[in-house]
Image 1 (tube, helix red, strand yellow):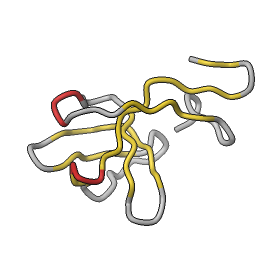
Image 2 (cartoon, rainbow, N blue to C red; image 1 turned 120 degrees about the horizontal axis):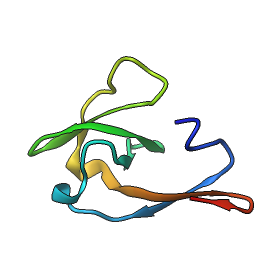
Image 3 (tube, rainbow, N blue to C red; image 1 turned 30 degrees about the vertical axis):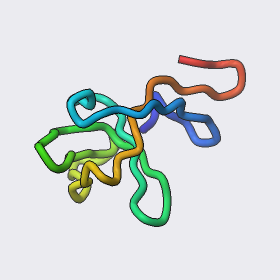
Image 4 (cartoon, one colour; image 1 turned 90 degrees about the horizontal axis):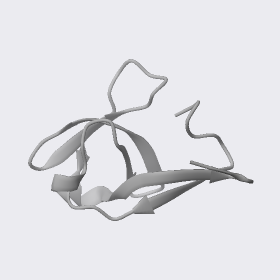
Length: 81
């Protein structure tokens, strides 16, 4: 997700409903083992499609039940945006 999100930083995440998550947002979800965050490419009634900024291919679909929320800010040390 560079250059916007760097390793060892913190994402500030807010819960959101399916209707609030839009194309271009950074979604955060739990895949059963870990939390992941990628940019939203498309939303449908039951799932979202995401892709890492540095990849050309999309991720497997993410069910709405897996979504934790939307990243609203990033901070690393004294930097926050």
